Image (cartoon, rainbow, N blue to C red):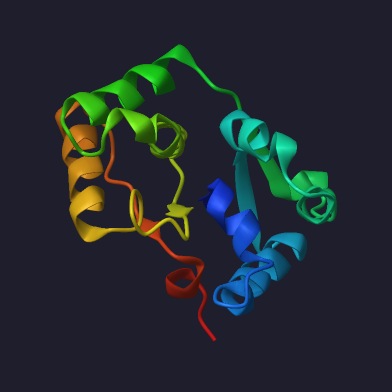
Length: 150
């Protein structure tokens, strides 16, 4: 079973007309147990003030289909390496923490709709360059549309 890390943008994408088709298919696969969702403490923090309908979406996912990832010092250090290597600026620390958590927990894929700081060929190369430099595996970073096969 694939283990896919979902960043915060994927939860919002469920309710946005531009992204909802692919996001809903991805969530259906998670709910049906075809995909294990990696859900982090970072995502939980970011969704803390989210509208109720987004929180309800999370509650619909069976617990056995979720792997909860804690924020760690190691993830914070790796996130800082991304910033120090100028993959993104300091204001993108949260995005870097998502990448670090997915990397350190050996996610098969990180799913995101964040084209500016995450799903961007230049950024992906930068994150993976840092990962490689520090002895971590290369992380697949894709949109839900790229992940889903119809």
